[in-house]
Length: 394
Image (cartoon, rainbow, N blue to C red):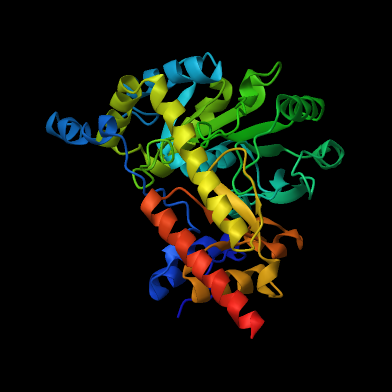
């Protein structure tokens, strides 16, 4: 047997709680509200364009940064929806999902040993990708009660750091950072010469009138921001792996070079289909997305509350953190597993998103499921809560 088996760069890498809980959910026949599967139907304006693209011969490598039609469609979209003016020839890179964009960005713009700041709660992929790239993560907790930005903590951590990751709307927090919070982050980035990497993949999932602000549009930030997004969530095509990034050409150039090295290009016919979808879907599609998901949010959060698991109502994205202390477990992993085994509902332990102990009282649920699935999940939660109440009354 080869010794050692693992490389040093993955020595600290373990299977995520998201994958582990999803696997256990399958074994138990539960409803998976842990992983962001997003099984709602994709728009036909997208799916119906795949076969025609294949029939036209879109089966070969594309340019490393994506087909021209898609890069132009993305530039038009960013001008319309984000207030960003980007050159589709040199400032847009189509990637293998937003995760591919993030990995290529770290490899292209950061060095081993660089400190990268993660706002806590954080998304585990951001952490693990940074670790494998040889970076040193530093965690900057949001306010434990409100999940608001703690400017003093960010200021302290920023000294000597290379980059900060900003995820808004946030996974798992559901926070949508206000303009004031974004301006504060921008000021700190400029004061300490930080690269800002923004994950904006949930940009259309906004509730209760909240506004999405792209960091790159703030004064002084275009030259130091990499804006990452994709269509896994917006079009419910998580398996297609079509993401992208936009950045000043001095940043996009080396990222594109790295993207070419690792991934060559995103799937050719799927690029064409997404480009057609961007051209064919009107503004009411995106407004309807927010409206439909707010209804899902409200129904599922009500079910959590009725089951005694108080939710933190998200402002955006499609995840909700809920208080799992009523299950009486010492850790969030034990509580999530208990809920799966007793109620048949899979969640993700809050400890997957916190370096400290704050996550031990929380679990993350995903409500990006079809209404019938959410209704069944609500019934299971109600039956589970009723059974616990009967047992306690005996």
